[in-house]
Length: 203
Image (cartoon, rainbow, N blue to C red; front, side, top):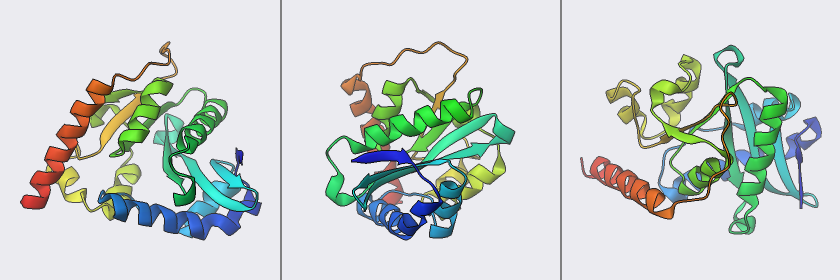
């Protein structure tokens, strides 16, 4: 398995990546911003993507987005192809895109919003901490990307203060040591998210 920085030559995988992201969101029943093949093209050609390949077969992908004039960066589109799930590949990809962020944008705060418990755990181990949305970028273009998420109405109703996603932030100016997972904390967080989702479905 090769986990490498994506280049223009990897554009041939963009359509498969886009489709995989969409299908994953549907199967999980959670909201996610769509990533078109054309959009993924740009991340590959500007050197802001990490791709995992099993010989010439797509296995996983993630990319960096820059917000607030370089004050913030986010890791988006983290996906692992169905045949490669449950093998720890998402964690390996996330670590590589995290390292790439520190190299390319050493002074930027790294943040993310996600409904995925597995991603939350990986972020926590890397030194992220859960934060209110007010601590994340105020770049309107970032939040506009949530419009294709089926839970966008929640974000609007709360005036962009909260949603079903959890906000997480890594600040390179703070000395943060990698942490061990407290499963009790994440189980409580999972129950809260599930309760919110259930209320939305029943409303």
